[in-house]
Length: 434
Image 1: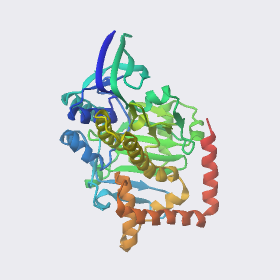
Image 2 (image 1 turned 90 degrees about the horizontal axis):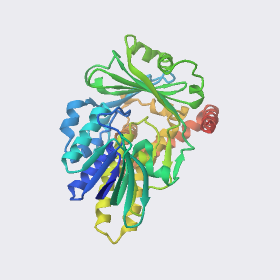
Image 3 (image 1 turned 120 degrees about the vertical axis):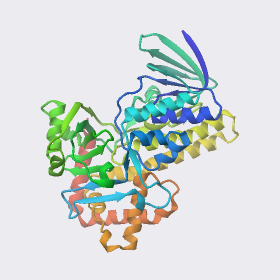
Image 4 (image 1 turned 30 degrees about the horizontal axis):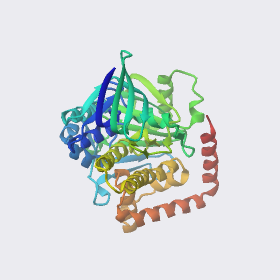
């Protein structure tokens, strides 16, 4: 039995775990990190946001990410149901706070960069180590884990951070994990080669397509591969009568614009699926422990917010834990401020995510008319782009334009009441499916 003691022990070696571990190690804390897999390992979620860039710079890995990523200057939305078939939201047209581009990355490469960086910054890392149970005593946290050979290990720490992603180690143990009743979707995805790309500066843009069963992403990667996934209603996935590879390709073929881009495309490896993935823990923190990133909550990949929210909560979490370890007198206030900030950012994305497939938001997002150069329309679109860029928290410039946008959404719902009412009933039925 190996005994190891740390100031902070982090469960999970993804973007959230490596970020908080690195930042705490840089502050002089003795930090350990346990990762159940071995890097590099596959992970979906290849599209970053512009507001990831300041965090990557803070970690000292921006140049390495630039070397393995393709620049994404915009998010492109496509629809067969609106007068405007395609609209591109360029990050450079957001309000002043966010960078004008982001990156599309292979997560195996991206996560390995973050993991290696935290090792170089002094974090003691152990891969192939699966946490089986924790003892959350007030003064000392005890973590039990098992390595790939079945050998048992015990670790102790003053503070415990759960960054285990969808494994949600603490949320499961504490029985605080809740399926999100407002949003039940599932995804099938895979990597393809020989997919037609946009040209010039738009070559790295993410393309998003609405279709009758949900929405589809196309994410170009630097090596020529394209990540493609379909986020679908549960009832549609229940119609599958063939293998997953065939079902994915059949689904993609339903959209003429995608079919045209995939005439020569070939699936690399096997398609994968994940079902009913939207959840949240009823607890974000406790006495001596913290849940960050997907270990706390995950909603939907539509706005590529997962990695950003994980790294941003980790950045804030590092400041919080550093103060708590120093026995800051205002502990409760610090925890409330942290939880409020994390919840506020998640909610900013959730407003759009919950409504993304609705006829009202669909029409509103595709109603942009830049030729008119209307100043109010420009400010509204800039505010929406700021949210898409990850710059929604404490951005006072976008409050009024976003309020107007949401007001217009309500007007669109009323103007097409029957259509939106039918959609809401359909969505409720889907959320009730197991």
